[in-house]
Every structure is written in C-alpha cells, then in structure tokens.
Amino acid sequence: MFNDEQPAPAPAPPPSSSSNLLFDGKQFERAPRPLYSSDLLPKPASYSSSHGKTSAQTQAPPPPSTHAPVPRHHQKPSKESKEPKPGQLKRVTVPRECLPRFLAIAKINTSLNRETCGLLLGKDRGHKYVVTTLLIPKQHATSDTCAMEDEELVLQFTEERSLITLGWIHTHPSQSCFMSSVDLHTHSAFQRMLPESFAIVCAPKYNPTFGIFRLTDPPGLQIILGCNAQEAFHPHPDKPIYTDADREHVYLKDAHLEIVDLR
Ligand SMILES: [Zn+2]
Ligand SMILES: [Zn+2]
Image (cartoon, rainbow, N blue to C red; front, side):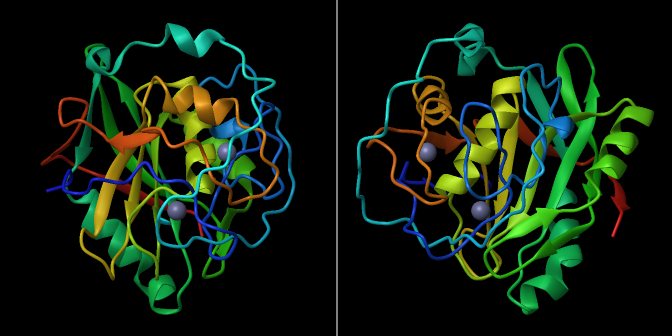
C-alpha cells in the first residue's frame, strides 16, 4: 500500500506553499534553511553546518510540468557516483506502526494546518538497516514550513544511542503526497550520505495518504546535487528525479518502534 503513488517526477511547485526542512548543503546554498542540519546526517563528511532560518516556503500540488533548465555549472561527478544502484541497496525495515503513530503525533498540527517533521533513526544490522526510533525534534512550523530547533539535542541523542539517521518523515497538512523541490533538496543531502535513505511524506487529506520516496540514482540525485537554483521552489529538468522506494528496498514490518518526542 505504500507504493501506490506514482509521484510524477515533477518539477517543483511554484513558490507558494511550503514544505519543510531542507538542508543547506555546500552544493546548494538555498535561501530557506534546511530543517536538518548536516550534523544530523549520516556521516556528513562534507557538509556545511549553516544555521540560517527557514523561511516560508510553499508547496503546491505537483505542477503540470514546467521545466526550466537548471544551472549546470558545479555539477560534477563526485563520490555519489559510486553509490550502489537501486538494486544493490540494503533493505531497510520500518515498523508498520510508524505511520499511524506519526500521524497521531502530528494530528494537532495538521488540524492547525501546520507541518510536522520527524527523523527515522535506526541501526545497521549488517545485511540490512532497521528503523528503531521515531524522533520528533523540537520544531516550529507554519502551513508551509517546518524547522527544527535545538539540533544539538538531536545530535546528542543520536550519538549517545549510536543511531543512524535512515530517513525522515513529514506531513503535508493541506497538500497532496509528493516531493516538492524543497523536499528533493532536503532529501538529496540524506541520500548523498546514505544511499538507502528514504523520505516519507504524509498527506492525511489525500489519497494516497503517504508515500515513501527516494531520488533516482541516476539521474535524480545528480540533478539535485548539481542544482544551484536560489529560489526555494523551482522547477527541475523533466526527468524521473524521484520515485517510490522499491519494496525490496524499504518495507514495513511488524516491529517495535520507540518514539521520542523532544518537543
Ligand atoms: Zn514536503
Ligand atoms: Zn533544485
């Protein structure tokens, strides 16, 4: 049921709605500040840890398709090209209750048309990754944005517990289930560090209500990492930039889920 959606590798919506967290990776200095700082990424070897403020961003439903060429300078093949192909990804198990529990946690914000975000943390079991913990960081949100606060507490938590950030989850309180350009840039930072990283988008008012996504590799990851667009929401080339995470990659499983709410 989580692979229902066929997210149009759509270009991002025009500036006007919002989304959330993003990263300010070195490769894309963007106006809005990433919800997640590089500190929280799995082994951020090359991140800049900027601490800007998130500005309101918008998230509109996947636009029909406007594609503006993206600046290509800076687009250079780098380490990510060594990442395993989709078929070589290690499996990641996600406790099935993660979705309903997160939606329950987000319910009040959702009713107030505010986004909610969380981190999916877990362990490397050798042949697979296992999500064990849903961490809700301190955050502030609007209908279009969600920004984490006190990132140090999150970093401290993950380090003390030796947890890896395997994915992230956030709501679209009034938007459909898709990856906005902001989401794509946010996620590229995760996936660049850990090819198995995935993003769960929950859209309680729509069907499907959630999707589990990842950037295609290639060409999605490379396109996003090479994109230097300054606008928070901007179009990307008309290519299959992201996709549903394959069930052989991420799958839901009846397993224990620890929930830690730092708010
Ligand atoms: Zn989003
Ligand atoms: Zn972009």
